[in-house]
Amino acid sequence: MLRRFTSLLAPMTGASNSITVRLKLDNSPGTLSRVLGVIGDVGGNVGAIDIVRHEANFLVRDVSIDTSSVSHQHEILSMLHGIDGVTVQQWSDRTFLMHLGGKISTGVKFPLRTRDDLSMAYTPGVARVCMAIHENPEKARNLTIKKNTVAVVSDGTAVLGLGDIGPEAAMPVMEGKAMLFKEFGGVDAFPLCIAEKDPEEIIKLVKAVAPTFGGINLEDISAPRCFEIERRLQEELDIPVFHDDQHGTAVVLTAALINALKLIQKNPGDLKAVVLGVGAAGTACTNMMLNLGIKNIIGIDRHGVLHREDKTLSREKMEYAQRTNPNCETGTLKDVIKGADLFVGVSGPKTLTQDDVRSMAANPMIFAMSNPEPEIMPLEAVEAGASIVCTGRSDFPNQVNNVLCFPGIFRGALDVSATEINEEMKMAAAQAIADSIPLEALGPDYIIPSVFDRSVAANVAKAVAKAARETGVARVTGEYSIGPRGSMREIKYT
Image 1 (spheres, rainbow, N blue to C red):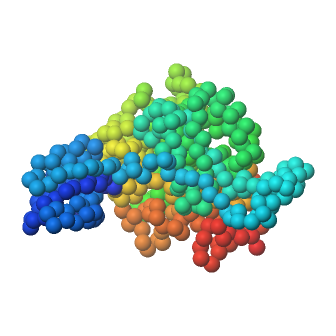
Image 2 (cartoon, rainbow, N blue to C red):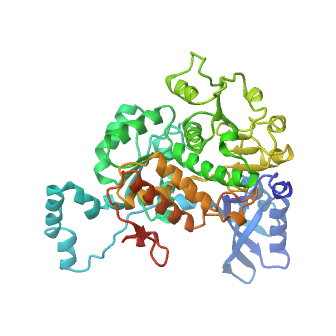
Image 3 (cartoon, one colour):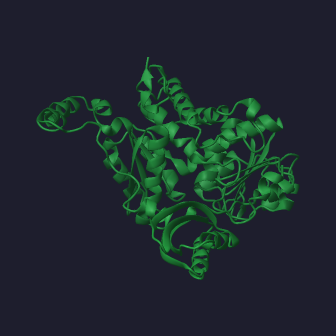
């Protein structure tokens, strides 16, 4: 079990830090070999090598190189500059190249080639559609982009692990989110990064633009403001509002936990769980674990264990304490981790030690989801006795990745014109993700399906739509099925 993690101890090279270098090389034997040798000696990983120009005395080649960091990029470039017979003409960061001009654009569904086309898509024909919606506003759900469009709303106050970097700097993340919606769920999404931090003003703004959208995805809004913003918007709008940082993480964690319990053969009601970090994600994870049947959950923030006897807690933290820690344990992580079956980390790097893991119950489960560095590295956790380890990183097994849930959740919600995304729909999504892996295929390093398993979004959409109908939040109540080619756009009602 240890072997699968040992190769991941060194810094990982990857496409996210890759560069393309244009080199002019003397046309003599061994020149390219020297280049490749130098790159390999400093830990670069060569990908594509393309000839750009060929002359009698020299060749110009583009060499793509995976690196581990910006400093690693410059180290490789410095070494290349020092090779005889080699000139570095230019280089580019492939990730920045992908972002030039943004990553998404609008498109049209019908060509405008004739006067007839124009008269139907725009004036005068469009006026009849406008009046039909004016007479019955519900028709906007079928006659406009509202049917399949989600707003990705952020104020840039809690972007990834970068913190409060502002709305402009949040745009690349929100564009990426829109790409994921489209690619995995067939959902049209558009980023709205707003220069406003006042919850009341954010609520007003989202309500004002809501007629355009079939759903609202809140993203990277800091706690505790995010709780009130989501609650108010869901109360005051008749479309789904979903804070993915909270609920997306919780849904995928719950899916992983469902499958992990199958492997270690423990019941939810018998578990002791410790949650380190009770912000947006930690609170939502706790809520879903409670719904799963875990009764003994202990939350810890930077001040220590949350318990109902602590009168200094904020309103949100006291509400959390009232629903958790039934034995009113106190102290620090080291005090309450003893005998625990499950550790859930949504806090920061290196906050869980091997001694902590050794003090847990037999076959403990470690969900260390801090990014980019987890609370404990997987190899360290396994060496200390962990039976199952999950992280938020793509270079380790069992990645807790929200893309497994939010495209399918919104796909299912939009398909039945749901008014909200309730707890039953979230649990249905978690179960669908878990069930995407056959029981016989489960293993310690495979309890979460790949993000590129295209069946997951379809499974989640179907389960979420079913739960919406059963709980009375679906406007469209007919059953539906997936089209013969599995396309999300071929969902039809029968």
